[in-house]
Image (tube, rainbow, N blue to C red; front, side, top):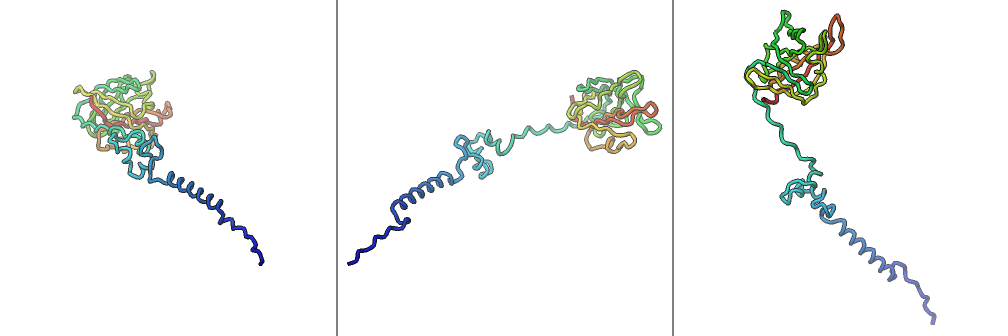
Length: 242
């Protein structure tokens, strides 16, 4: 009788292989359960985490009734500030008496101005360099339309009332006292310099439908023969009444 030859089992049928495979499967399943979840918090110290907020349209940060706190601000941005106050009602007609720009140290009396024979706006008297001129044919302070105030930048005797006008910053107030005791407050929107040769009348003098103010003086280069080459124009809107 011939004895049987001993055959070694294949490696994939050994007990050691089966135990190793079972252990590996357990590790994989545990890892999947921990990481796969159902959209749970991204971090334990931040309830509702960024993933949950995104999935629920930001409601997770407000679910406890306390509104958007630190977590909510990270997804929806900073809370908006209070809406701006509505514009004041336009004022009835009353002539201006004084003109003040506190940020420039200007506090000056006002004189009325008219158009000359060439339909050009007159200037304040040269001998009174601290006067501000107001076009009396246009709106008075706070009235609807575009009011015009002008003044000298300098004279032969030195700096005049609007020497520093080009330095006024947007957002700064311009206050114009009226004969009726009220003060119309304008807020500066922008400052521009225009060549006199191509001065944009419509942009400067045109009405926007609300009470506005243009403050004008000379600018640019100076020549004894032709004077200044440009004009400095401050654009401002009516913003308050005192």
